[in-house]
Image (cartoon, rainbow, N blue to C red):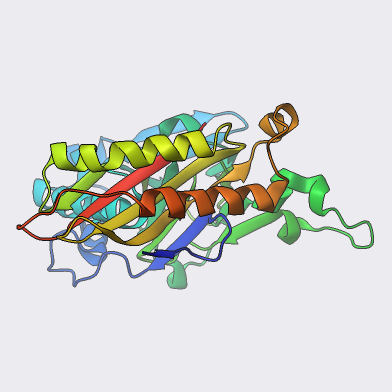
Length: 325
């Protein structure tokens, strides 16, 4: 059994460029969705139902933007293609089975989002940009995220150097067809947009959350066989890591051969950070990186030892999210 990880540390932010491929004639491509938006704002003197669906969301000092539900804005074919692409990404790359209903929002002069966190919505948030970023003539619009090391500020504090905004905040430009996915616990916002009033030239994004990190599988084995094979290994793992001194999500994919052996364990997503409150209370807990490393070693050992019934129908892929909260 071989275990694949990223770099041994938590990954809180991912950027995928060229997410929705295809031309403007392909249903649900980034160009197709963008074309629909441009067409509906092409003639500002025209009044029609597609222009009346926008909610001007303003919470003083926190949120200012124009938003609508993507399901009611795009055609069924466009919306289905969009959500299928997002759902597949969540399942294959994050270990999340579903997505929340996507929002479509545009930002003109004065629109912004001040730092906040979307923890109750799902383990990962996303922003998919339909913004003509290279053509903009305005300022702002970047997604800002508090750098994860700032959340553990004192442990890495260096009194010999000063700090500026770039040391505290990460900025991600909403380039066209770029998917930004990030740990929803990380405080984030949108830099204030200045210098544009035409919606067709504004910051335009789709956004929402990846949800339901629940076990799922595909392949030869049926549900009963998967549960029977997993149960002893998961029980052994939970006993070995109790009490867990981390918080976050670790999503693991098991490749199970037709003979019932785990041939590979792949970490899909890992946002685990040490929980200081648990660390203080439990003498068994190790410090910081040692605790993470020990937990990952137990995952490799215990899940890698899982055995399943042989299956003539072929191999099976099992996705197992482990939530520490």
